[in-house]
Amino acid sequence: QSALTQPASVSGSPGQSITISCTGTSSDVGNHNYVSWYQQYPGKAPKLIIYDVINRPSGVSNRFSGSKSGNTASLTISGLQAEDEADYYCSSYSSSSTWVFGGGTKLTVL
Amino acid sequence: EVQVEESGGGLVQPGGSLRLSCTGSGFTFTSHWMHWVRQVPGKGLVWVSRINTDGTTTNYADSVKGRFTISRDNAENTVYLQMNSLRADDTAVYYCARVRQGSAGLDYWGQGTLVTVSS
Image 1 (cartoon, chains in turn red, blue):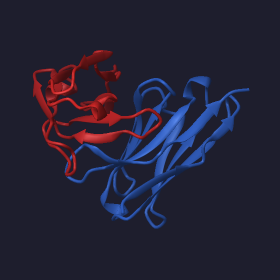
Image 2 (cartoon, each protein chain N blue to C red):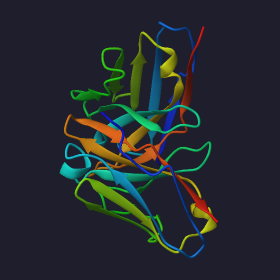
Image 3 (cartoon, rainbow over the protein chains, first blue to last red):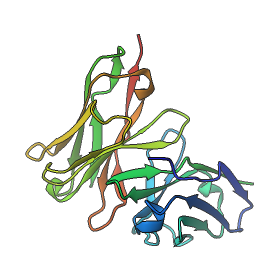
């Protein structure tokens, strides 16, 4: 049950687009379309922003999008805004009937 | 309004036990799988356990298997996490989360309850 690999930090200027990668293995990301992404502000509970690789819950901005290629999933945030500054976590179902999270990525809006 | 609320956290000595509760409201509790996820303050999210709608299927992270037990009482709209043989590295905020129907995403989370294992 090794954690998925995310960059520790990414940054971008308002209006730009950024992408956060999430690399797993053929036992998790590569073999299941059950990748989710969560946004978390300091001291707050995580919020679901992408589920099942590409789907957005109602109420989540369409500036957030998800994709997957092989063992790597990605979260793209377009039209970066100051309010997007937060921690982002990916998660995937694993073939051992368990779940695994990534280590988290801190997004800084410059 | 959908709500998920944890309770039961606190300070416990190494080797001790604690039972966390998670109560759901504003939705059909029996229709949703539920998970526990923990987070050491300042660190990342770590998956702990999950339970299916009727409590017959449970899964655990290797780090808690054999020490933690997840269960649910659908009559009380509550999920439990019984934690035994607690260690210092179990210290964390424990979140309960609801699984979105028809998917694997955790769409509603509680605010978390802090468990501190220390002598």
